[in-house]
Length: 127
Image (tube, rainbow, N blue to C red; front, side):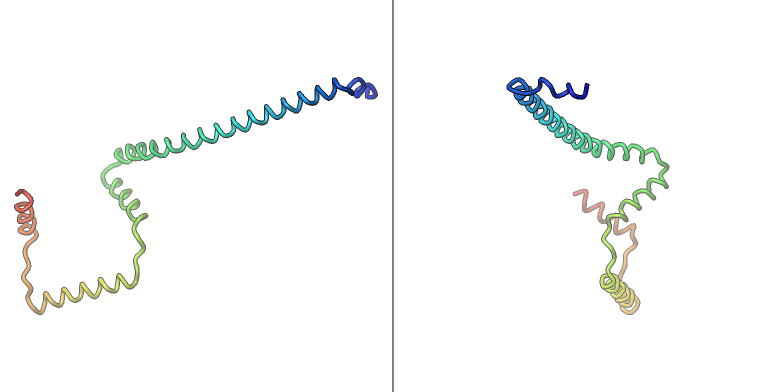
């Protein structure tokens, strides 16, 4: 049986068959490549939709939390995007705070209660 395997597959018929077989393989490979490209595009599009949907989903889930847990979550999220503190900036703020306290203590700077300040702001903003 092994001897008869290659018999009869030579000449013009065999070369024509190989021609069509190669064309078929190229056709299938091209279709497969196209399917892969479409699948990748679909995954990218679904990921983008999922991202916007996930933000909405997370917001809805967060709104179901008790107020103290929502505040903790908000603090953690905001802390994750705050710039890192710089020693120079911290030192400058420490100096500014000390200067203001010293100025208040020595000069008896005039201060207003917060209630009066906010009342004045409300009055000005109503115009």
